[in-house]
Length: 114
Length: 111
Image 1 (tube, each protein chain N blue to C red):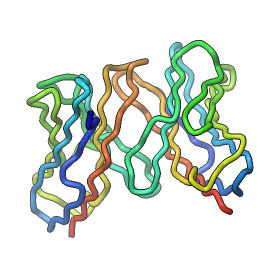
Image 2 (cartoon, each protein chain N blue to C red):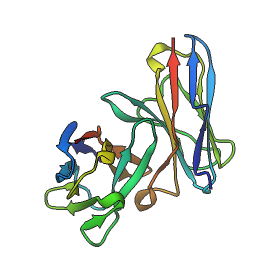
Image 3 (cartoon, each protein chain N blue to C red):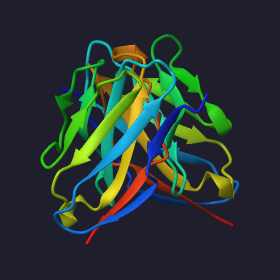
């Protein structure tokens, strides 16, 4: 099993460009999450999904959109990138909520916006 | 809503010394707690979790944590650290459909 994979691993964008980050999991998990990690700020939740076809806003959703068309994939989109979106992005998945909310993380995508 | 506070942002320690990383959570009827480790340039991986039962939880790499309901704490301990334990450690609490993470503690093990 590959677990949680993220594509790409690195990306450099210019301000105003768009891109999509892909997250895939092969554990048949219902829940998927997108976080960003910045120095001194820990992990901040961007958006999450509790099942195929559903999405919900997290703590810092502005400037991002997501889609969950297939259960195993969760896409994070930046429509018009800004330097403030320079960060490391992590995807995670879990079986369910509450006591079943052990999250499995991908290796991360390092994004630089110039 | 749940919250988590990690009391130390950085913990320097010498190799083979014991270490304790502190975590406090907000009180709730049912609480599920996790510790994750992040090695440099990697994603997070689970160290251990408390769901119910014994308050002393053992995890990977010789780490353990004690759930203390009266003090609303879930401190992580290791009796003797190695250089390879240098990493960032995150405490987290389950809050409905999400995990709420603390700000992280950087453990730096020096020879």
